Length: 510
Image (cartoon, rainbow, N blue to C red):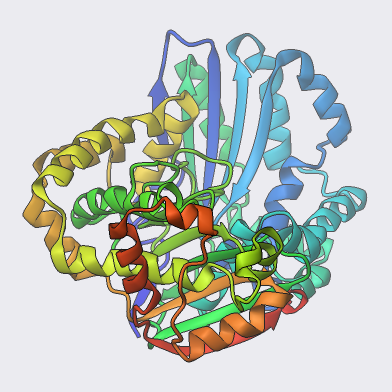
């Protein structure tokens, strides 16, 4: 199995506390980002979620004589704010304040990062919230996000990427305040820190910030090695059954040896945008599943992790990763119980739309692999994408975040460099990349669905039974023959299903 040494791309030969600057003299705001090369991959076995809890406690606790509430009351008149985020390989702290209040705000930043109070009461509160997330919130609040986390759990089985950054139920329970203090000392250090600063700031302030952050723990982090996930053999489906599920939420994917550091990424960006750009109605998946058949809210594809896709319209900065995968997001489609209640003519169906939707989506990808994009579609998509990626950096915070992410991938300015690559990419490059990186025969699939749907859906998938689209009579009567013919092809489209398992929702992320 191929291994990657964590940190080579990011810090390799760089000095500690590398600084990324975005000087904006015409703005009245100052933004500071502190990016630590650690992330959930640095969680000890049995303490999964420790990096997340440590990061959260730093920004949701106090410092010195000031409690968390005292700090919030103090910064409220300044319209200042700060937060933390943790992904697989980085933790980021973001501080934002009007330049007029920077002098008053900075001692709080310094105190939180260098002298956190780590009080037992703060720890208990933050840990309780995290425990609630892994035990309840992830299962109940959004089946779309739930399916994404379940897919990663199976796709990255046996690797440091497997567990949610928030951890697992039993592991979070085991974390102590002493564990947090040790994690802070070992992994939130001056030796794995990148400083980012944007806005209207002085050279003197930056010098002070660099000097002060040198007071972070002097430990040299013992960063783990990363192992690439195994390519699934055949299609493996995990059906997570729960009471009163809204529908069937599907997230499917397979490992892909391609990241932003590779020039081929630009070509695959074009193909992916055409197939299913996030929250864009022109994508083929959206057009086929939602626009033509009104099956659900949206259907998209991804060539890298897209954080919180239910809330974010644009690809956010702050989640750079060494390991990558291709994925499909089919937002909840109706289950049989719902369709039977709505339409008398569907009273005899055994499953809802999940099997058909999955087949139609994979058939669309298969057609794209075989036939490629047309010159017309390529030209239109490439033109759109070159403008669209510039929207990633609309704000000073997002611009700074992308500049810092760029360092992870060995680049200087990802958005500008990607635009130059897109300018040069050809139709032949795109169609070659599609054939090189995409396939439909080997993948993991997570489906969150109602208990009433789980068994019949599993049977249909295991036996590759025909799964006709279930329309009401009125809707079907208004569809053109070409759509109905495509329905027939999709309903019988062969999937290379190898294994199907049914899991109770309460048994996930234990």
